Amino acid sequence: MARTLKRRLLLLFALFFLLAACRPSPQANVLGYLVERQFGLLATPAGAPGSLAGRVVRDGVPVAGATVLVAERTGAAHTARTDAAGRYRIDAPPGVYAVAAVAPGLAEGELTTSTGAPMLFTLAEGAAITVADLALAPLTPPLLPADLAAAVNLRQTAAYTATAPFPTDAAAQVRAYAFDHDGVTVDSLRLYLPLAAMPADRYPPVLFIAPTAIDDWQNVSVAFAASGYAVVGIAPEPERGVDADAQAGDALIALRLAQSGALGPEVGADRPVAMGGSYSSAILARLLRLEGDSLAGWVTVGGLADAFAGAQAYYAGEIEMPPQYSLLVPALGAPNRNPLAFLRYSPVFVADELPATLIIHTAADRVLPIDQAHALEAAVRAAGAPVETYYYEDVSHYLGIGENLTDSGREMYYRILEFLRRYGGLE
Image (tube, rainbow, N blue to C red; front, top):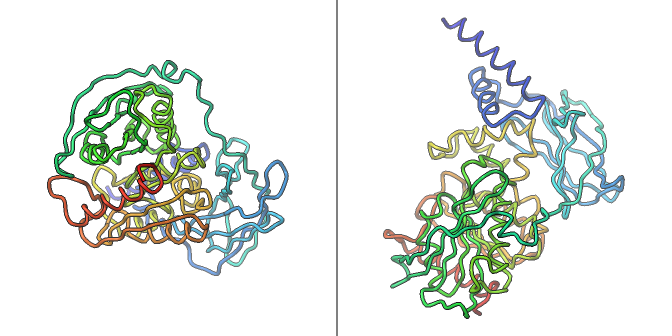
């Protein structure tokens, strides 16, 4: 029986690497992880480091200041910055690696084969490998049609009044919408307005990308709407899976619909502040790359800043993933073979592009350790952007505004409110 099981696992393992040549699906990634775990193949081989060297270019011109990286199978990243000639050298343990890079204003990129799969390099102990030029392309937001509401079949699905237990007597008008984008119906779009809002009124916009179902976070949206903001809420669409770019595309459409007046005339012309937490902070980070200076600031609560460090903590058994997300990290693929998937979830590597930042995190977080927040803070400060932090001790991961509100929750709310007033209007 044991021999038969082992033979089957070996066949699955071979299938995984066959799929790896053509960018496997999340399901295939999970299958590969389970096989590797069964055979104890997740560890990085021991031995003296080797090096990979090369050049980053754009249209053949060297790119200075690009971040280039490779990652170990367990997620540990090894990085380098390109010099004035676009050259880099990365020292890493023996292993199989794909090389990825990103630079301000340029999309994340990697060296690929003729089929578009990541190009893999086997680095032996003490070896030095020179790789081909890694070409980066400009980062270009999607071109949206002029009549966006018609193009995405925007429709209002409900209108109602909602209340929240905090602040006292908090209430808001709510409009629910749905739209169609890239073959998916997104039905989580909401607009929350102050209860007394009239069509002639204008309120500074706040974009809130909820971590889970949008209505589960109604207390948060109502609380800020009651304080004088037009809160545009949207949640990750389950059909998108781990595709952060597609999720960010949905959020961009929601923001553009609000700014065009398609959700109502009450949304003001101020530059929005965006908020996200946990997984949605990674979606927000993708949106920040697309939006550039059009956002006045962003708030990340218990957020992901470095997906490589997150993967490393996951594989080391240092974090506690909710059961429904227990295989989320393996679904992204092996970090050494598919670093681009993790780079896209890592705003710490593009801190030069971030607007004013408010980082909120708890030392009690066992899903995304507070080290994520510390790394993001250091990167934003090094980039010279405004950054504020609120680190607290109690409550784990999520810090909501609900019936069991803690002192930390109250403090969080007022810290965010101050940040909104400083950067998003109502000063």
